[in-house]
Image: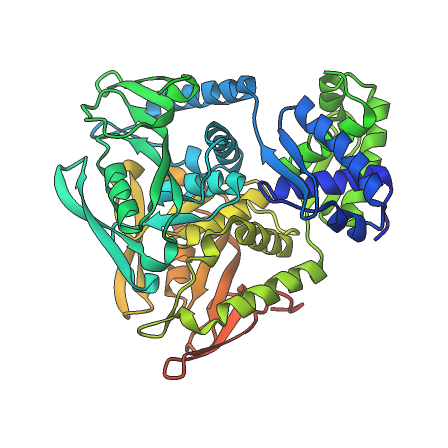
Length: 274
Length: 274
């Protein structure tokens, strides 16, 4: 289909945003939109500039045969901070306190606009890493892992706490369940992760760290390695032998059940060294 | 920030794609990019045309005070069919058969590019409906519901088969578990769905229909109503009292465990009347 330049720019930028981290040759666009490769090159220059002006990401041009363009999504530190501060205010709402001092999070982790932003922020903070898959544990981690995987354009794998017949053969490890100090099992379908993968672990709430340690030991069973750990929120109250580095968007510093108050701060994701 | 027209078109189209079904006034763009409202109007005309040319969606202009533009994502029937045919071929791969005649689906439902497309196709087929939320049951339905909710820009709600302390008060209903013919319970957090919502139910695999009937009875408990049911695949072998209409992307017509063959057809989503 032959398109005008202005139209081409809209459709090419849409394509790049929907296909992050993927090398696409300029010929693909030239053929699709019946244009000279040199025109597509000029389009890319404009799109690249626009993307950088509003800081939604970078376009890298790879020259030579087999070359093309790759879009790497990004987000400005200012936008990230604004988003995280809004989330901090939401998480501080007193009606989130549940009996037992738990915090209700499910509404935040099931709103697409919020999840997209969380995905962009976490993906950005690991953009210099090679990541082949995002791992999480069912159920609440799934939308988070999905959001991060969308931005990184890699599959996500779901570790389960129960055994489902529809997963086929599984590998299991034991882990210490933080909330109960009991030894429990977690399972991962053998087919779901290739050997040699570099994996980013994502979870909603970090307490004792037992669940994440369990996932790290699963990685070893799959001959895969840890690329990093990111959590939506961590609980600074908790005594935790920190056996792994992690990045958190938010940090819950105090839950006062009696007075129905939750104290939340911005997490360590903006700390330069962690 | 002052932007050139070409740059504005890239950033405005990106904004609209990321904020579907949301009314945004032209003044928002005019102020953000320091342009006359008439220039933004002209940008929108070009973007609208480009979106329609490649059939990624429609831009509706609402006039008057409180007016603006709304982007409704779409997908062409040709593109939908190509995507579904590719999925049909993937689902027919013989190594998906698990002991007991189950089919391994998890790889398809954890690949962002596939999920995005499934989300677009399902959302498109309900685009004339008012939908306030997407509902599914944990765990495998979650990425699907998330994908559809992303396109419709509404929250998704996750029904659980177990009771979690972090969900707060819940409402439960009994349902007939198809695989075992037993009566089981499903739970939904009281906070997760507002009364009066119109809900689209999404699930990965429709067999006896017990799970979906359970979710439909949950809707009544929440004074909400069913807007529709969509499944990734349904099993045509199964005897099913069909108490609800549904749309399916794929239909599994036969699973031959002995010869390791799965017969899959395109589902009913393209049937005009269902």
